[in-house]
Length: 432
Image (cartoon, rainbow, N blue to C red; front, side, top):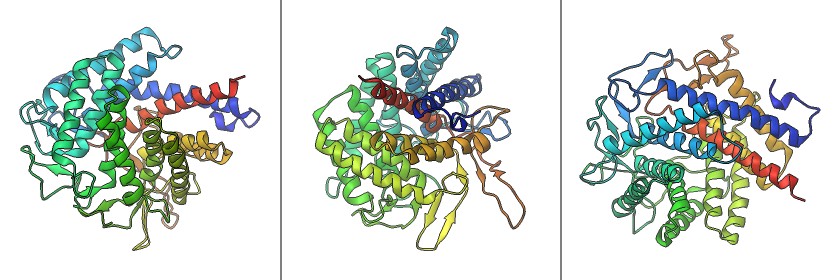
């Protein structure tokens, strides 16, 4: 029975029980990826497994997927290396081996050792596939390599992360209007088609890429406290404050032209709640009280804005477009994962029990509709009930279980963040 149903327990005991459940969830997620993702034919990790568990052995391998695997394994390893967090010895060894596998493959096959940056994809045999330089992918490479360096004290990985950061600054930074261009050719020529995927608008600047750039830069700053990097983090916070966050609604604008004019009114509730904690974390790492207090207020405003997407079942809708009145109501796995962290962050900043209720609703929805209790991990998502047709929740069974965009990063990170934050809350409670 989930911790939230134990109504007689006090708040602290409830959080402890939640922590126990999430610790188990983290191990289950990692076990799935360690056992099912390795490519035993070509090395590294498979490029695609469908919702039925069928593996496509010749599928291309995405740079974002592989960076996210490396980040997740490294973050989990770093978590388990903390005193009191160690699982059984055999599992730690398996995770460490998986982490080394991820690092070795990424270094050998995704880094463009000739021209800098990382490849968007490689073929099944590890040869270059799409050689475009998507800044989103470079950001995740910096995020992953810096995390691996922190977990293993590997100086080569840190040097790689710093080199990629410099590539981003050299080629992608817009010195006139601020922010970063989206995509380049292998030779670093700005592309006409800048999109991350066919679902996206073709605009030169996006919220999504900038969110993951600041996420990566913050992680790099934790291990490499360069003054210029610190300035870049401050500049990115200013971009979010002045260009990306709608200061009337506190939703994030998604797409922009080169001069930061918004090109879409669409609202992404998952990105809102994810940004609420990532941006506060970005201010916090600067060790600047004024910045931290400002972003505490903004983080809580964004978290409140995201609640506009809540459903009666407690889940968050995917998107809403005010210009058409259209609601995209399917539920994807990554949104409630980020929501649990975002609302736990809000609870730390302002301990209102409504945030615990929001977390409860997300965790309950995950357990009821997204966890694959038979095959492991979480499914991509579900379509909502259709009362007129008499349908309940329907699985999005044409989407991947492992794939270019289906990874252990969102749910694995949510588990690591929740465990860390509940420890922090408990330590504050027990302070004399």
